[in-house]
Figure 1 (cartoon, rainbow, N blue to C red):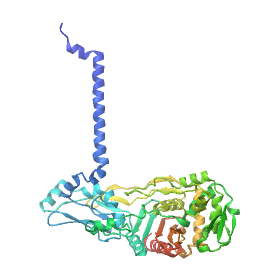
Figure 2: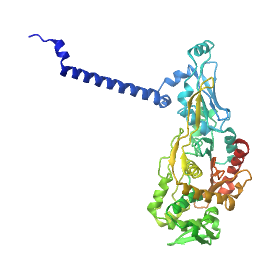
Figure 3: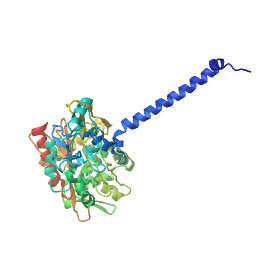
Figure 4: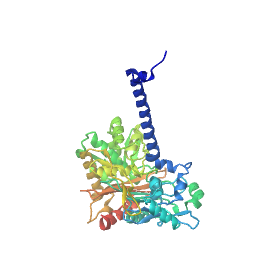
Length: 478
């Protein structure tokens, strides 16, 4: 018996099976193509940073690693071609931008890691590359233009000086990072030669204290306590407290800084003068579960949003599991820990009507002709606070400057608002100095967060740094 294959193939059931099979194979092919596109294009940065990937060394034989610039065009990093064909990475400002720009060695860090893919690739035409190759030179890698402001960065570094700590300056309306300083520092020009010493140094110079520093917030935390008091609908306008230097309840005692007595204080004055006793009293009135919700609203125990490369952002924590721990937490002591980055995020949100813009550090990528091939745009994380909540905290933070611990920030050019903090870190009363704030009050532009390790009070150590930065910004930059 002979089978007519033509008839079988042309039969309706068989046609249906063939079309179905073709459809399956087509779908699989498309999925494979999408997967390859994702791996080799979207994840190219990660692939190039992988120490097992030889593509980077191959690219460096053809491309001179691109430069990194500040927002005003100042060169922060560039590569020099050596006679033997190797490249040397040069950082003209040495250690000043070390944590922000990072380094191009080992696993890389900072902007060097974030835009590694672009710095290693080129926009030069085939003819340009051929000509340069004939001349013994390399194609030019893409240039990364950062959001960093050279003047603010240099001043922040100088103002912090030999002290350990961090300074972080951001644009509240866009999230642009204007300055990021962490001390102690390292010189990225010598990172390979000094690696063993730097890595083993007890002061941890490789640690980015802005994002990875973990500190007791001290009185800066009163921003969170005041927010929760307002959020729970308490009658803050009628609040009053007689401070004799301490607050006690259930055999627990909280003292004001160095035992100072503030006398009768209302809610605003309690905040402006940073009265521990009054805020311990305020803390006892807060509902535990609502307090937890409020802290969660303001990013506690939350992965913090970031639009730039980092080696992990510290996640803040607290403990209100007992009366004493709740008292301690209300004034920013006890087991509460925060990063300067987190404090700055909340400060930005308060300044920006409750809306948080995600911080980012690269503004654009340009080719060797100066043409922009990629532009980074502001991104909103969403509303952390309502309009009323942000306005309430703005007014409190303004009072810190007009009649409280931040009076040094008074100026005829701008109106600043903020909160100081003295965060005790041992049993001897020694403290870190904090400040976080923004300006101008009516239409905020920048937020500044400063911590000076072992700096004593925030008024003594952190506020003067913020003052210099505010002055520079409003006198020369804006």
